Image 1 (cartoon, one colour):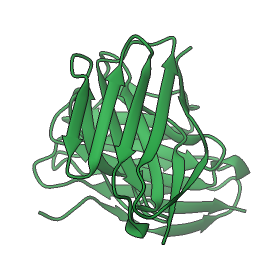
Image 2: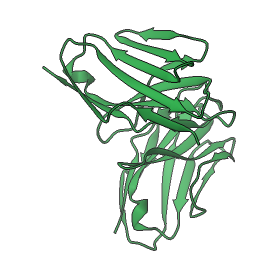
Image 3: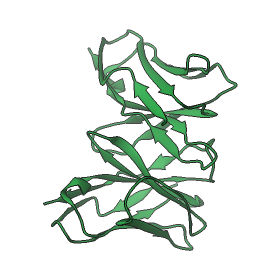
Image 4: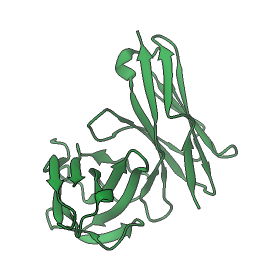
Length: 114
Length: 112
């Protein structure tokens, strides 16, 4: 099976702009979670989607949003970018919801905000 | 609030030795605990999952323990190799919602 894919891999944006990141989960996986990773804060949970519905949300401002399509592919959007949004954004898929399921991560999108 | 600490940011050991990484948590009683490996520039890779009623789990050269009394998990790599050099992350289940809460990781360096 192909792994989790994320596009684009690298992105440079200017403060105030918005950005959309894409994630294709492993075939058959219905749960997609998004994380932000920075050197100072580590991996922080953004949100989880399952069957096109947001099931869980982390402690991030409303500028961060996402959605999931019927084929389980997911996108996340960050509006009004700030310098502090520079990070590695990781998408992870799992076969089902629930804390007993391991997650399969994509390679991430490196976002740099200047 | 929930807090997860991995004992050190970096651990240097000699090839062939056993590496032991620690994950401590407070204000929390997770039912599941997972360990992941992350190489530079890549996403984390799942290694092992252990349940609260399991004391120990093994997979090849890897062993994980889960002590709910001490609120601690130990992750061991026996007969370590330079290829084991990476950052290792522990992750706890975030409760009934199902999301994972990650520690900041320990960077392991195995010297030949």
